[in-house]
Image: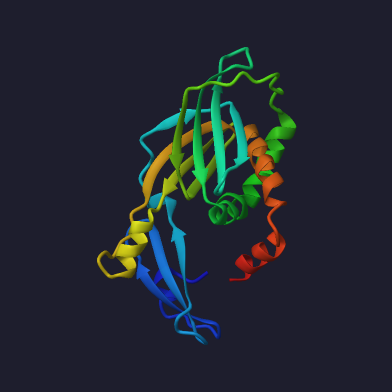
Length: 217
């Protein structure tokens, strides 16, 4: 894999690549079409080891994935122990393109590992869920997932459109990655969450072609 500096000089038959930002955790590249100068694509790479840890943290033992009016909403909740009643819940709105690239495509090996945790100790089913009106909503378009034994976490981040504008216009040299919230959860629930994501992934038209094109890029 090319290093950050090496990518700057890469030119293919389809695109020329210009690095617009390389400081901090986010690398931003502009791919220009060799056949049409007016066609360009912005591409990101995030080094989460350089990212700030979200100050907000939430422990969840419930999750749900819902198709929203735009993109998807991830719900994480805390059940009252010994019951099917939700005490609180957080909602994280996520755009569809990053749902495919970030949540799904980047978690294939983690999904397999989480499956082994589920096979060893599956979570007990929840009865008739009693909802809560204590919900806090957030927006994110990046997520880092990690697992260690029975403990897992998802760190959610947001890259605002304004950051892209300022870097592309030359007013800034660094893309700011905003920490949103850390969700701590059992490793078996990572499998449950990704299986719920799978339901919607399989409904996206042309998803196999989308994933194959991203993988070949």
